Amino acid sequence: MNSNPYQSSETKQPAVQHLRNVVGWVAGSVFAAMASVTPLWSGLHLAGQEFGLFPAPYGVFGIEINGTPVSNRSFMWASLLAGGLFIGVAVVCFLRVRINQKHNATVRSASSQTIR
Image 1 (cartoon, one colour):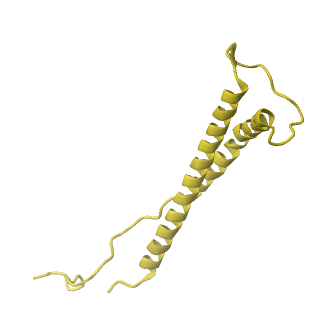
Image 2 (spheres, one colour; image 1 turned 135 degrees about the vertical axis):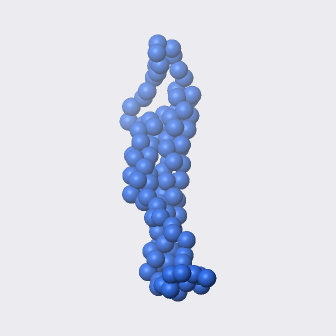
Image 3 (cartoon, rainbow, N blue to C red; image 1 turned 135 degrees about the horizontal axis):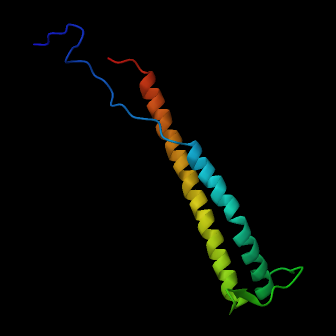
């Protein structure tokens, strides 16, 4: 027997769910997209120079990293890979934003319903 008349054992209460962060994921997506610009720019420039895809206004020759010569082609692929990874991170962050927005919408709609 329940001693409290205001607390019934038949009361249905939804499980409490917290709102998820959206702004942080948006900031991460924007940061990753902005960080991808420099490696993609240099990689595309070197691709245009190496493969003749489009006329390059200037040539890049003699790339050195810590005094060690690096070929243009390897630097091009490394730059394109780094830029692609940043773009991938931006896409994953954007998808997480969409998932969190849908979750927050369902939590808000569930909390606005009356407890039966």
